Image 1 (cartoon, helix red, strand yellow):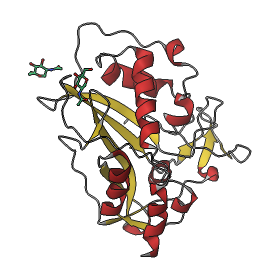
Image 2: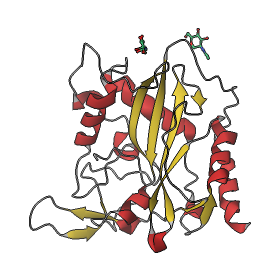
Image 3: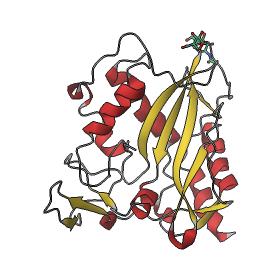
Image 4: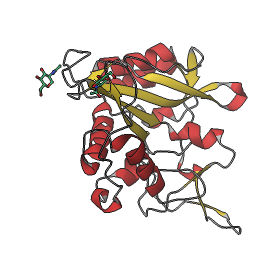
Length: 256
Ligand SMILES: *[C@@H]1O[C@H](CO)[C@@H](O)[C@H](O)[C@H]1NC(C)=O
Ligand SMILES: *[C@@H]1O[C@H](CO)[C@@H](O)[C@H](O)[C@H]1NC(C)=O
């Protein structure tokens, strides 16, 4: 099937981390990383998507939208702890969040609310300090290398869920949970991928996977440079096309 070929090409792009999948370690926790496909986000929201005001172009890739720590015994998110360190933006400058944890929500914003929200919701009780928490998310993302977004993906093709999962299974020896959203012609699009890793950072199939409705084949909606607009956060807001920017897309935490 011709539509599968681009996906299979991606295999070559994925890191082959050939460690055996061991579900549990002795840390008692596991991580869940959420990655957003911006092409679907831009398509499905009526406001479209906006270029962040960070001054850094988002990578043309999946964006991180969250890293959550789970209790491996209860599968409950670890959100409470005694010493919640306050969010400090100065601790995480220059580590690459603008590219890979970008907030392309409109109106254009500087991403700080997403990072602050992630820290307060999941990071502060993760057992990691702030910089280590965000670096762990970036490191998981880069090891997954979800760049099956090579240009081949911008072609409105349909891909089988099984084929998508297999691409990652072959790369990191664990399957993502696939979340879809409704796109053009009422077709399901790939919207977010969720990956889990045990306390040692070994990728595992998510122990308590969230359930999402998708069709057996889903659309990879293209993500093009012109889709990212600049919208000022005031009443006279106008949209500008971010035509001058080299296109790279990153990952981002959207506030719900
Ligand atoms: C995880 O790390 C701990 C200590 O760092 C080690 O004892 C354990 O064997 C590791 N587990 C796996 C699955 O690698
Ligand atoms: C997980 O939950 C159990 C039961 O509530 C608790 O005893 C344990 O300490 C928790 N583990 C972690 C790592 O939070």
